[in-house]
Length: 163
Image 1 (cartoon, rainbow, N blue to C red):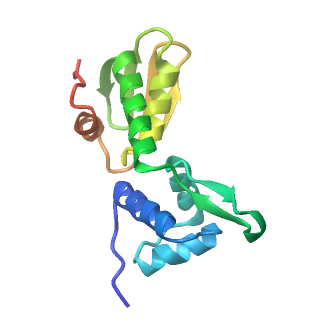
Image 2: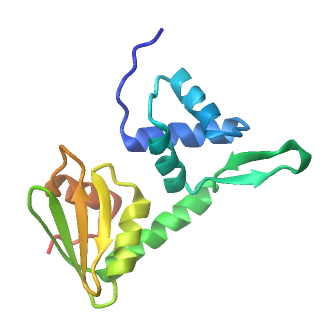
């Protein structure tokens, strides 16, 4: 038996994506078993969130039932570009304390910026709340800092200004 090792969310999503493309996966239980064979041990709730982030959906195969399908790499790349544009178009500044990142946005841009952050699947983002008009609150996962979130964002969006 191989030793289980902790993988980042990004690594895990890549593994799930590969499994879904290489196998006809009909259930989350089946996918959990395939992940365990790769020494990736997660809960069903985590898998559900991962499938949502990957935009995986069950598609019909006629009399053969349903299986999970994911968008192509090209579709995923186009979606990522849209998320990046939503953030670049909407944000004004980013600041944080120990538990929370606050992103100031232009008026009316809080929802698209929050949605883009949720869909980008940054490891340190527990979740976002879009304010009524021009603030996005980002809850941090334990062990993550505002500096780490900013670094992750700048890695994915090199054009991002800090102020």
